Image (cartoon, rainbow, N blue to C red; front, side):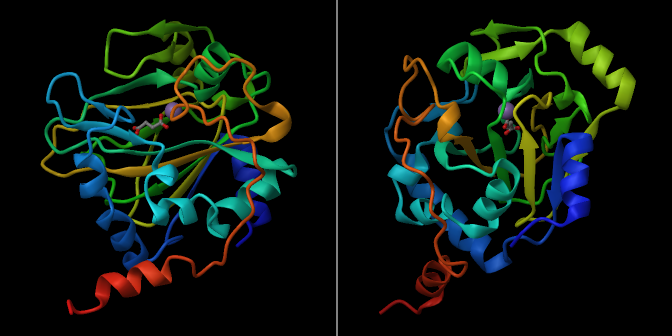
Length: 267
Ligand code: SIN
Ligand code: MN
């Protein structure tokens, strides 16, 4: 399922696109059904919120669950990425960011490239972040905030923040955030479950605490051209996977089997 010319143009102009109804309700239910077991595992790839102790982000999911092994090769994610990047890509990072009701904590203003470059030695800001909303995301449950057009600068001044949350992040300097927000405003990326977001590596984004009574979980796949791979491997594999095998899309109906299994009456 390819992007239209209008979607490609919008991605070029704003640095992100929001595509509603990309995955069906049944497919999202099947994806969500795998999460309780994954979140309950004692695994260092489950990063825990600093204050509440609930899961903040569950990482490396394609190596921990067969549904996610299929999802990272899903043509509804991979075909648009191939269309944009036009070269072989590897799976760089796979996670569900949870942002639980009442307790989900902030993701500070950042670009993904600042961490990919600062931690992993990635040379160019070519990686793409592909999200699937797994809950309805509204004004209230911690939507991602995007600064439109900020991706056009190849770099934004940033500092490593080990303090604010349990996830170390290269955080964009506030003067730079102010400058970009004053220029083009802030957009909250909202939508029904099954909505897909695509955004560039140098787009400034973040999200506020979730003080609402509604969870806000989002699946995120980061893909990067093999030619632009990490040059340092100091972070754990689940934060930047070392396997550079080019992604080959699987069948578009690859989630059907999981949907059927979920709907089958207990024997
Ligand atoms: C978030 O889950 O709100 C942040 C996601 C991201 O930085 O990609
Ligand atoms: Mn990010």
